[in-house]
Image (cartoon, rainbow, N blue to C red):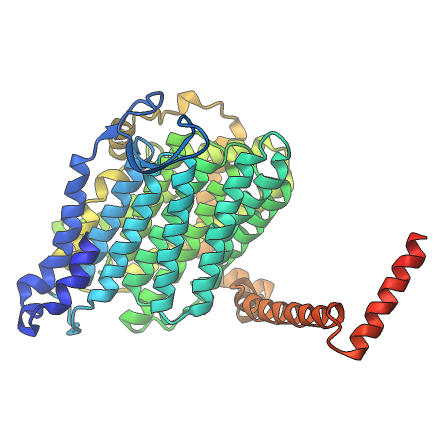
Length: 535
């Protein structure tokens, strides 16, 4: 509804009204706030056994018998509620940042861009409230179609087509995993795992490598909503461990992401605020992507723990992204610490500090990996996450060297996230909202899992602090490694491979349809060879 209001009403307003401070700075954040208030009027289904509780039928079809009915239906339950809250908080934080009254930008309101943000949010919300498999399939196609339109608006036709293909392969994997559960479960589940790896691993790499001129606000909105939708699909669709080859693809992708988080922080051209923000956004992108891939790797886990970590992960992403670089601590000024409070709480969540939203999930992930009895994979995972967490060291160094001015207007959005990111308070709020058990008493933990959770931040801090010394001693060619790890070359080689496949297909058509005398000769030779072999 907010997107329609922006597209229909916004451009038709007189120019002086569009530039009026009340409309320019308060209209879009106000619409995001109204979307958040609308959650209070949503009927929530709290009983998983009650199949019709809170169910809303959008459409239905009758087949051979009156009892055979397929319906498009939606329902907000305890799993979808935290993801709906995340979408609202992300939209609120970014719109407050984008329409900051103290901003020096004099650009006119881009109604189409902001409407695209709300449309992406609506597509994600439709995905979260899908009540059955049929609705989930339609919701995936709808979300990826909206995403494709977003990329078309950004003039990236290849990414738009790729996103549509991703929607097709994801829905195909879900359908095959459901239909072939009793006959050939490995085939359907492998396709589903491949689709989720592409959604949470391969595609983010290709999108970052292709779309280099990305505004910070649009990038933050897109990545948050895309990753949130992927995590939700992971929680809902995966009910058994992924195939071995898919797990190794996830591990290698996470290792590349962690390596980029470690090497990207070598950027020294942060003399301007734009370069500083670009470095910070790159660090945070690879850091969050590594954590998301670990969630996918360790599935299936307890739904409540993973959902809590997903909420903390996305909100931490936003809080760290939006926090201004105010400079070194000035402890004599009592108000100085407040702008950094969200970033500090987000850091505790990402490292899995006790009683944070990431605590139980991190321990569950490590224990799940230890149960696989694959030491090589475990070592790679530890290395990948340590490399990713090392980016936090550079992040805080960047904040300490900054001289930005704090804006209380943009801080409102991230202050709303602080209760979810504060250890103890965040777990209490999440447990009260979703009735989830986030205590470690319900986990069967080993000493090794607890040890890994302790040494991971230590190793990450070591790699971050002594980064330059390690690179100089090992003589790592950073430019070459970054170029390879970003997988931008994969697009070029992919285009070459598919072009050659297309040419080969055309040659096959020439041979089979006899469009050339050489084709007739080859076709006759093939038939003769088949006759000889079969005889």
